[in-house]
Length: 196
Length: 214
Image (cartoon, rainbow over all chains, first blue to last red; front, top):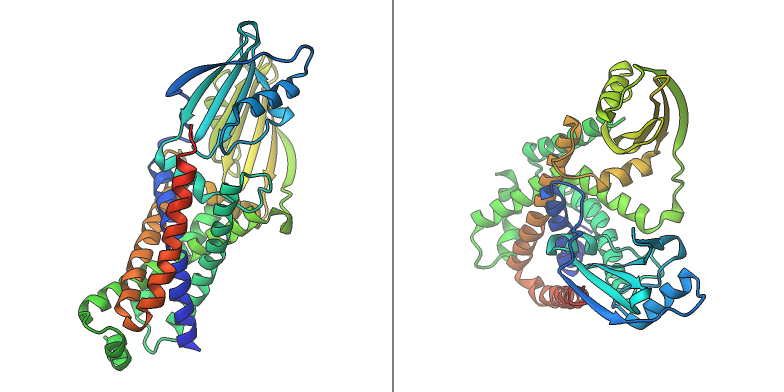
């Protein structure tokens, strides 16, 4: 039994190695950040000709922009997310895992201004670690990643159980490992209580 | 030492050519990091399940409201929050979402899992506090998202420190696990295949995601 659990522990670890590294790196990235702010400054701005359909509601214009630009890994703009600039132009933020395409519909100029705001690598990895299968409308590439994430998530829980089992069934259990477990548990419990 | 002596027979068969001392050190590091991180990793795993399958869990927070009378005429949100926290010891946390308006200030006092939304009326000095307390799963969810050293309260800084330690531990657990697998010659062939599948999939997908712009 112990040998079987050990094999599964090793195989699952190898099969989810990249995800576990990613989770650790994502934690280190957010630990090193000084605020929750994401970048807002565009690295490039470009213009594309576009004429809004006459008498079209904002949602329809947003859908037309979405179809015209076909920005990768984005999704149609939900109605509640439509905004306007101080100049009263329609503002559309198309999010993807790398950042934002901020599109302003300049109707009087018959064109779109497209600002490209790119997240740093750390933020990208942090967002990649957060992809879940619960998002049914996510692009297929993100969905594929989310399914592997889901597998790694269950494996992480399985590692906790199997690792504990392997340790408890080892013939010798060092006192310092007990002390380490106690330290981690007491620290977690103390912080949990501190937040109550 | 007991571990080394008791495992020695099996160990020698499994780790051909790898120095015993090195293996013992790495295994002990793996055990030490894992045992310390265990409660945190369970928290991350369980809350990840909650986020991925939110329909499985009841997440409605308990909400109650009450009023406090504090000094009238205050305009500084931090002074308002300070006075409220001084007045009620149970009301503590990080001040955020400050929104001044014509009649006063709206702000939040937050700890992971608990949000106190304060509506302060400048004229009367009345602060209406709406407190939302998450259940166990809601609190785990908030803790999963909480990290960094930039938060004000000491408890949150300590939590941020713990997150940094556990994150480092997770990376080291992976690296030490990889080393220990490699010492087991009998597992190398299948292990290389599994690791290759994982790395190929992860690197390909992450690269495709990253090059998708903007």
